[in-house]
Image 1 (cartoon, helix red, strand yellow):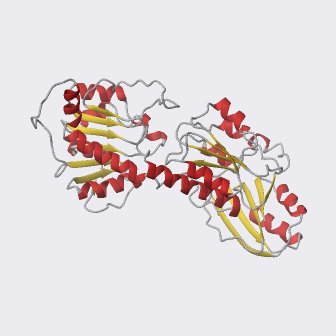
Image 2 (image 1 turned 30 degrees about the vertical axis):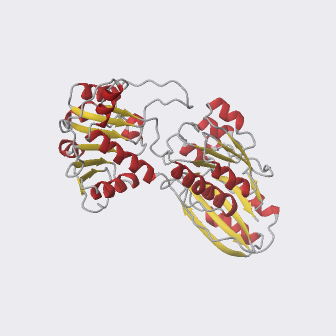
Length: 428
């Protein structure tokens, strides 16, 4: 499906400082996509099958490298390590859409993308099961003292005594963050016989026999295992420090599979060395190497009661294949139909398939009167409107109009002239 893209004229002096750079009306033909960080090959196959030229890179790129590589690129795909900053977005004059091939999007400046009319899509469901299975495995390994037994055997010492090894059945699991991952962990942990409690800053529907805690301290004081599954919002930075570890139940287990900046690792080491905590498993870190094979340092290294993994919670073949199918479909649905369903920073619209018509897409700052101006343009051009769709956020409005005859370039130019226009696209 071909597209034409155009930009509004220079902003008035009153709006000039807020006017984002608008992409050129000249589109690469075919479109180009750049996929970084060893994204599953299914993604490249899917995009190539839709007619895009695809360049792949096994590792992440620095800001300077990324700005250079994005020249002429319409579609960018990243995972967790590549930082898509405001400077990167401003420099990417041809960029139309970004895909985060993971759950988190805090590595992407969502506001900068929104200001340029660039939707961002992620994979909110595709690796949930993988993270949950790893959490369950860690709970069992840590409660059974498998790490200690393995370390002793590696040092040549046989110690078969059960010691303080415990079953998971009957133990209380406290889940911090009851989103998609936390809720699924709740169900599977309960199936293993665990008593589940959860804490979330938002009111959530409890699944199975799980019960909410009114405060984080209530959960910490009563849980044998605490597993963290919060999102990347700034409020979660240093959510766990010395005070929170002191509030936890003696001889309990701590697991973090969420974000590296959530935990003060020095405080966690102190809690482990003092015997306050039994053991811990950590999969994410405040600073992570950008490529495999790079050096890694952490305050938790050298502790036999700590299970360290290199951010592999969602890194299973099944999860990456699922993501490699899911995210490209969202990207292509936007490019080919204008659909923004499940976009994380953009008005969400699920659009019908385009048949026998042209589709005009108008992205603008959300101020009163824009829809009326769009319709006035269409009326003046005597366009037959077959369908029209509108969705807004506080910042941006998204209007899609299907028209029933060949559009005239004058329509596009007139739509560009509407004040507060960010981007105009035409699908035909």
